[in-house]
Every structure is written in structure tokens, then in C-alpha cells.
Image 1 (cartoon, helix red, strand yellow):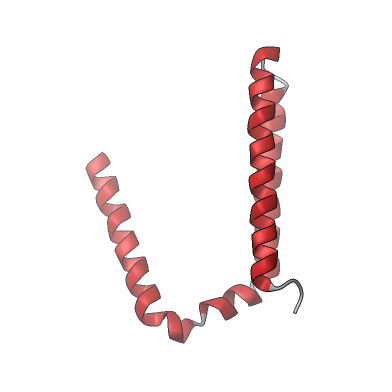
Image 2: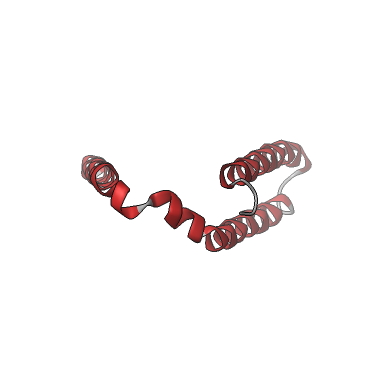
Length: 96
């Protein structure tokens, strides 16, 4: 089963690489991403909300010892989210 999954993922990777290599100039990927920036922002916000809700639910069902570990994990998550959003803001140059 794992070999089948690995084969499918490898095939998908090669297909994706071929499409991006030969069709990227015609697709104008940066322009597509710029046009979809608000939709992608909404998608990221939904993902952040879902992860936060899951963390909140897990946090209130755990023992005090594991809560400290979960706080550290959430702090790392928040730092990564902030860096990711800052990086996205820098790439788009803020508002154009």
C-alpha cells in the first residue's frame, strides 16, 4: 500500500513539475496568485481558525503537565503563522 502511495505521489510531483516548467510562462502564475490574494487570505484565515479551535478543544481536555507542552507548541505555531503572513505581505509589496 505504501509503495502505491509513494508511486502516486511521485507521479503527481513529476506531472506538477512538467506543467510548471512548460506552461508557467503562459499561465502567468504570479499574476494568478496576485488576483487570488483575497481568496487565499480567506482560506488561510479559515485554516488558522480551524487549527485554533482544535487546539482550544484539546487544551481544555488535557492535564496541567501536557498543557505546558501545548502552550509551547502553540507559541511556535503563532510565530510560524506571523512569519508566513509577513513573508506573504513582503512578496506582494503590501497593497498595489
